[in-house]
Length: 385
Ligand code: FSX
Ligand code: SF4
Ligand code: F3S
Image (cartoon, rainbow, N blue to C red; front, side, top):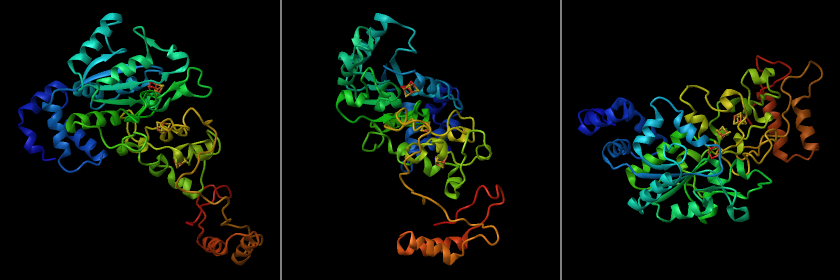
């Protein structure tokens, strides 16, 4: 973005005062968001102009079965204060946990905002919806979550599910799912844009809202409603430990040598190979390098992914969606006099019924194998296959 063009723009001067951050910081943020979303050149300037000049969209934010972590994650972000940005970019007209008002007063505010912005407001749903026994397990203002969601969705310009609970059921839907917790989309009977994660990354939400404000529509989504800019890649594809996975170096126990050295967490149950999200790319909490679950030494539990997070045991090995390593690797360093020759290895492979080329490939790899300089005898580096 040409910062000089915007340098003397009065609306930006006003924006600077409103947000309490420099216009440069804000422009840089918009550039980063546009790049993250893969938008065309000029989109960043359009986003800046939209935030500076457009009427803030009215947002009705519902809370159902959840821990309020989605809202918390928005409020606890820093640099620039994301909470301030989000609350400035939108007009939050109903939010049960942030509202000073309570009871009838709050419900009256929701209904009047819905009436005043009929067909134009953005409905954000946080939390799963209990459907068992006619939805009696979650009631707000005398209405079941099912009734409230349907009433609010009827006149919304768009409905967005935030967090895994609203996106696919999340933690409340963990088997045996005693309340029949379902996603907002399932209750509304359609695929709605959703930003899963427990909690979801606040930048993914902010980018989605700014896109809505700038272009009047939500960003492109995949077949289950997730914005493609954030959920089109497996965590495993962008993980900083991936080189260790490829080399066959794994932490086997929490606190062991491999864990301390930052080896791959696959064998501790990391679900990165079957979880789609941009966690390793955009990180959390603005505290810098490695500030995401795997970066801090914990396996990804697949919190964004239906059927993985809160469904599969943490220690269970992930399904490898994009790469299936061999069951075993040939030894690359043999003690003198005990190792198999290249020819013998190929022969063994052939006898074991491995397809014709595989034996030759194994022999080829043996020739390429390189012993690592650490963990001799414990960890061996695998050659490319
Ligand atoms: Fe909590 Fe939100 Fe998890 Fe759910 O986040 S962080 S239980 S996704 O709905 O509040
Ligand atoms: Fe990273 Fe987990 Fe993949 Fe290992 S299994 S490379 S820790 S995402
Ligand atoms: Fe969740 Fe895994 Fe990201 S646990 S926050 S999807 S690294």
